[in-house]
Length: 277
Length: 260
Ligand SMILES: Nc1ncnc2c1ncn2[C@@H]1O[C@H](COP(=O)(O)OP(=O)(O)OP(=O)(O)O)[C@@H](O)[C@H]1O
Ligand SMILES: [Mg+2]
Image 1: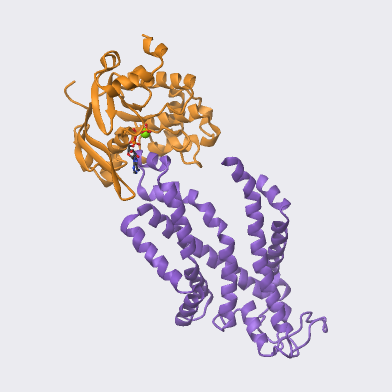
Image 2 (image 1 turned 135 degrees about the vertical axis):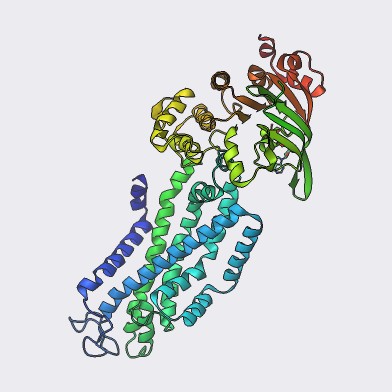
């Protein structure tokens, strides 16, 4: 609870939390406010924003409601961003913990695999993965996770290497604890903080990667996403720039919100760390 | 005593440190009888902790043999080693570092009971209370976090955790060195009581001869990776033979030396 208090006192954290809360609300309310398929034609094509009260943000080339798209797009962006980041962190934690704890050959092998994933630019990897397996939500999530797990794995491994030498790990061995239990119950929870500090970057990166994949037409074609909307607007960029600008702003605010929240979290954690040390 | 509980012969261990190798143990031999305390003294860096970690199988020796409870201790591995580990426990110097910072007292004590299935799950809470009382704490410490305890209290919990395993030997590596003097005396008394009650054997490692003298039946003096002198406590303290033993005794304040 102390933490919550400190967090609300941190300016950027609060702003970020409000932005994310609004986006989350939009995502949750989308099917209620805009029932039906947001990809279906709703009115005349290329209505300018703020001219028709039925379509406050206007309509696109095919007459689809832009506001409905932005709301439904929040669902896809947040869901994919969070799921992919969660998967990347989970894979990274497990691989990093195993590598750091096992050492020797297993460590070498796992870290060379992580190297391989890090040498290829993450976005290219995701691109290759989706274009091979086809565009659907699960493959997009998996592709983004695969492009992002190596860094958290490295962080977790470094932390595990230092924790591994602590006396309480020796004490756990002495009482006969199984090595897997030592790795996942004694070491992993204590290796979490630096990896979690990295989570915001992973979430923001995942949201952007998803948008970029959709922009290139590699997102799930049956789901509205901000990236796909920006790409769609690009065709009429001169005549109707708002079609790209509006979802673009939504994307920027989501990424900004995630960063601000992580800023607030580390602000709120800092004095506590100071006291423990 | 003819049947030794622990018998180590010709233990050698060197550490690789940045390309160079540091010899920490060269041909160490020692025996411990059931119910006996062997005090292990020596100046800082002479290899006491290395010996403790080799004996408890936290780190392998380069060569040598260890028999423990009539078995080839170094031949055990995997599940067989984990099962046998309960008979040889260890208490560490830093009472804070020896516990997972997230652990509660009850959690720390429940682990060995669960791992070795020593008491049925329904009786574990009662057993934990019993252990806490045995080491001089009350049952209401069980729910506290390890971080809420003082150093002396933590060391009592560490001893309780070792006791939970129902061991026949406890290796104490500088187990009272981090505690202040009055707490130290009470922990030493507790160790002596527990030994009498359960027939425990101890290897009591310390650079502090006064503490070693208070609890040990026999003393072994280490110097640069070797045991240079070994014998009954009184004999070693009153008539030290080696320069290393004499230096250690000279370092102990007179008052303590002359106490009966
Ligand atoms: N993990 C390790 N890696 C490399 N060298 C080590 C390691 N542990 C100990 N050593 C070296 O082995 C030698 C013996 O160290 P050890 O810790 O056994 O001494 P000690 O008698 O316990 O000293 P102290 O009284 O200071 O605890 C020292 O030279 C030390 O630098
Ligand atoms: Mg030591």
